[in-house]
Every structure is written in C-alpha cells, then in structure tokens.
Length: 184
Image: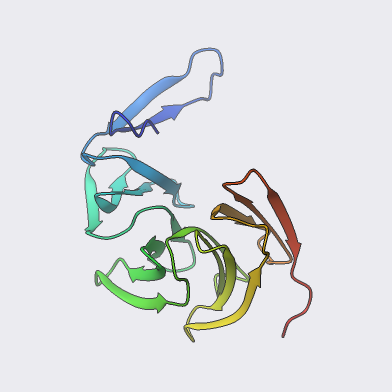
C-alpha cells in the first residue's frame, strides 16, 4: 500500500523473482493508514482520512464505503462485519446492512490499533491516550484497561488469537508485551 499516491496494489508473489501486480485499487483518493484482507482472499479493506472502503481484490471495484474510519480496520472473518476505529471509539459495522452494530467507547483520544481475540468475541484497542483496553464486543463492555505512566500515544497493536499475549508499540519507541492471564 502506498499511502502518498492513494492507491493499493495487489501483487501475485507466487514467483518471488518476478512479482506481478494483479490489480490496483485507485478509488480511495486520500492517505491510507490501515488495510486488511478477508480470509476468503476476495475482499480487501482500507481506511484513512476519507473513511473506510471495502473493495473486490479480483476486479478492484469498490464494494462498500463508510464515511468514517482512520487508523485501524479488520475484517471479522466469522461474520460479514468489519471492526474499525474513528476518533476515540472503535466500531463494528455489519456489511450486509451498512449499520454500525457496536460502538466501543472509553478512550479519550484516537484509537490507533485493535486486535480481535477469542473467536472475535473480544477486542483489544490501543489509543493515543496511553491506554490499552479489552472489550467484550457484543456487550459493548470494557473489562480491562492497561495504563503505564511511561507510555505515550500507543500506535499499533497485535495479539495472539487466544488473547493471552498482546504486543503494542508507542510513539516514544517502546514495545510492550502484555500477558493477559485469566481475567474471567
């Protein structure tokens, strides 16, 4: 993804010595900050200043658009939904209806990262407010908040699928690896 030129190329790298660009998604029209590929390999999603857009990875056609979204987006592979951030909240959008069905609140600054865990029933979010939160998605409930006084503006976050370990980097050059333990 080249965010300055506002396009997302899809490459076939079957032959590492001669990679081939298959399609180029050019309909975004602005800087992109995050992307994801659905597990069925037919759809991609990008987000940035111009919202969130789902596109067909075979044709490059736009399939769906949400006028919100900026720093983070992820397909929810067990349903036809995407999770994304906009401002200080994280959302879950049903791609069949176009409606946001979940809004996760509690951060005071931009949500910059997220990771779905435990069969997509929970989500970790990171924020520029210096916190990492764990939510039960359907209940829209924050069940844990991590804060470290030395951490400044968490940037991106990744978690193991079971949610036991979370890695998050921040803008002061620190990488935190958290072990969640049994919180239930």
